[in-house]
Length: 228
Ligand code: NI
Ligand code: MN
Image 1 (cartoon, rainbow, N blue to C red):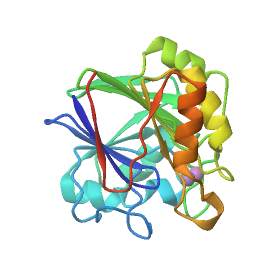
Image 2 (image 1 turned 180 degrees about the vertical axis):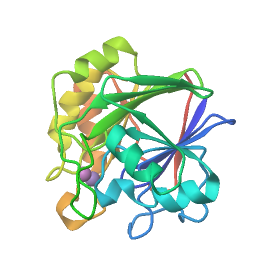
Image 3 (image 1 turned 120 degrees about the vertical axis):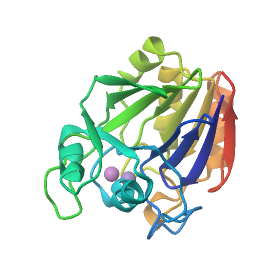
């Protein structure tokens, strides 16, 4: 069992009662943030790419909590040099941890640090913990290889961006749901800024009429319990 909490934008927490995984903790400056960077718990922080709305408060959170960061080699090195614990991975690679397994997947997007320097390739994650496989696509457009992720690790939950403009929009996210074939899809990366306004309930109606998945719309601060 995993308690999945949506903190706003693309930030998500996964808690199995022992381990607490935080993904893309953009909280300070996030108008939709449901928790403060000084309050959120984590013993692992996963960072998908260098953009500020994903890197967020990672440094402060890792320093306060002692959490281990998992990211691509470039981001892990950058953050490791700031004195936090970081484990580097790269696309297609996974690491077995006390919590289960974290795998880096491809994502089609950019990745630079807020100062413009190179942050490696962007990625998504398949997190296997508490008996569940949870995919966070992070920032990406639609791509056909998503089919492989669900075939390789049957997905309990897929977190998909629906904001359009910087990532796939709702129509492409419905096709992504068909490709991934998860039991549950949860929309993220919408509503935070003017250019990514979307109606998640319209997305839910499309998903549930066109695919076999259930769609759970979470407001920032709300949780969904994943029972694999
Ligand atoms: Ni981005
Ligand atoms: Mn983003």
